[in-house]
Image (cartoon, rainbow, N blue to C red; front, side):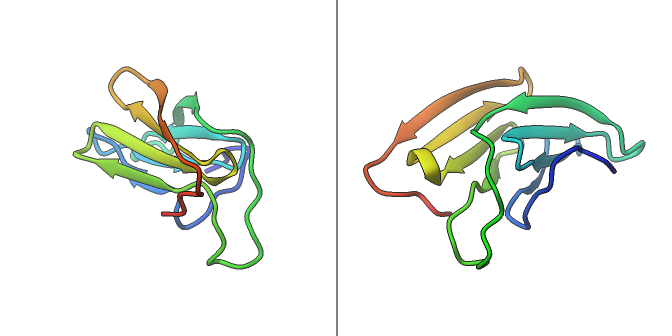
Length: 102
């Protein structure tokens, strides 16, 4: 599967229809059909990022709640974003004065 971006072990999830979700280093949430391996959508969410050398260091992280909302932390901006997986709309859910890491 070629997404045009790399990803980390904290960048993988499943959508409400079983689709694969991959948060790429290009800042987009890539939606992939699990049967064909084809990308069906790319939703811009966070700024482009690079994988840190140490696995413990902060990086954008994907968490899917209840199958229909994806939450993505953005440590560089001290924020968290919510993506409605049915509509594909992204919004900033909150920002903090300290960095969210997980």
